[in-house]
Length: 121
Image (cartoon, rainbow, N blue to C red; front, top):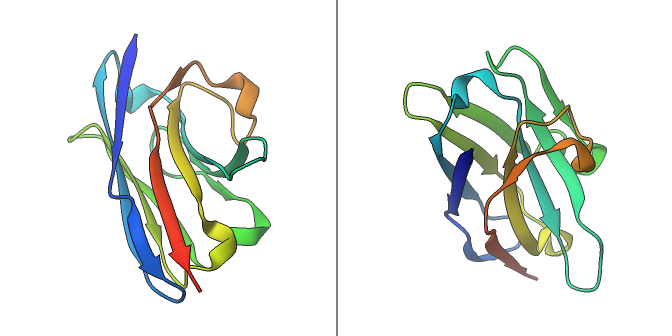
């Protein structure tokens, strides 16, 4: 079992930055693929980025490439998402998840409760 708690969301103006964190507790954070996902109002949950256990393999959806950076600190059991050049379309609840495969949402076993990111234009 893995417990995940996101933090760092908030209200930011377009063009601004936020850094999300996801603190993990429980079994074997360092051995799990981790991912960030988001869900905008009225839409289904979508993938954002994923990172392999060592951090060597990272994947982004096209809409965030060059603006978002996923990283992890296995010693602290924490996952991060640095978001720069934010746009209004990035507004969503952001979730971290553990134990899946790449960007495949349905493959993830454990989910956090989410943190709201609102980008004002």
